[in-house]
Length: 337
Ligand SMILES: Cc1cc2nc3c(=O)[nH]c(=O)nc-3n(C[C@H](O)[C@H](O)[C@H](O)COP(=O)(O)OP(=O)(O)OC[C@H]3O[C@@H](n4cnc5c(N)ncnc54)[C@H](O)[C@@H]3O)c2cc1C
Image: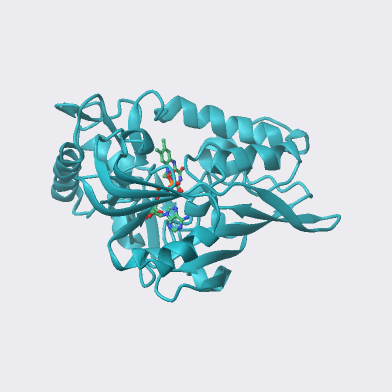
C-alpha cells in the first residue's frame, strides 16, 4: 500500500479540478483495507476513488482518499452457453468490455467506452444504450469499513435502480467494493432496443450483426456526441434523465412533438435531460471556463481553469431555467465532494 499526504487529485479526476486530498492510500491488495481498519483509518472521512469520472470536487478533501488499484480477472465458471467472470475493482471498465468482445462473450458491449473502474460500476449501476450493469451482474465482494469484515452482495442485496444502488443510499460511504462477478453469454444476444443503435443498424440483416459490430457502433455513436475527458475535461452526464408521470410527459409531448420520451410503464416516463437543457438555450454556453458541451447539453466541461464551484454554479443556473420552463427538477448524476 502506498500512503501519501497532501496528494494532488488533478490527474485523478476527469473534470481536471485542481484539489488536494489530505491523505491518499493506493491499495494493491484488499487485505490493505484490513490494515487500514486496524489503524482506525475509517474513523475519519474517507472517499473511494476509481477514476473520479463521476465526481466533482468542490474543495480540498480533508480526509483519506482510497484508490483501489487491484487488477485481475478470472473465469470462475464456464459452460457451453455462458461464462461467469470475477473482476477486481481496479480493472478499467472499458478494457473489460473489449476483453469480453474479443472472447465473443455477450452482455456488456452496449456499455462500451464508459470511463471508470469495475469497482465503481455497481455504485450507480452504470447504464447506456439500453443496457445496465444489473443485466449481467451476479454478485460483488466488499469490505465493510464499520466492522472490518468482507461481505458478499448478490443482485437483490444491491437494490439496483436507474443510476442507483444501495451503495448510494443506506450503505453510502460504508462499503469498499473489492471485486464484482458478472455472467456473460456465449450465445448471440444483440440488444438494439435503444433508438440510436437500431437506427445505426437499420437496413442491416440482423443475422449478420456480430458482437464487435455492436461495440464499434456504440463507440462510434458515443465519440460523435461525447467529449473525450483526455481532451476536454468533463464528468459525462451531469444530470439524470428525469422520470416523470406519464400523463405529464404526454402533455409535454403534445406541446413539443419532437421531445424524446421513453415510456417506462403506464405510470412513469423518462425524458431526455439533454433535450430539456438544450431547449433552454444552454448548449455551447460558457460562464468563464465552465461550459456546456457544444454537441451534448447534458455534459458540462472544464475548458481550462474552472473550479468545482464554477461548474456547480453553471449547473444550478441550468437546473433553475429547466425548472422555470418545464416545471421539472433535474437531479444530479454527478457526486459532489
Ligand atoms: C465522458 C463520460 C461518459 C460517461 N458515460 C457514462 C454512461 O454512459 N453511463 C454511466 O452510467 N456512467 C457514465 N459516466 C459516469 C462514470 O463513468 C461512471 O459512473 C463510472 O462507473 C465511474 O467510475 P469511476 O471509477 O470513475 O468512479 P468514481 O467517479 O471514482 O466514483 C464514483 C462513486 O463510486 C464510488 N466508488 C468508486 N469505486 C468504488 C469502490 N471500489 N468501492 C466503493 N465505492 C466506490 C465513489 O466513492 C463515488 O461515490 C461517464 C463519465 C464520463 C466522464
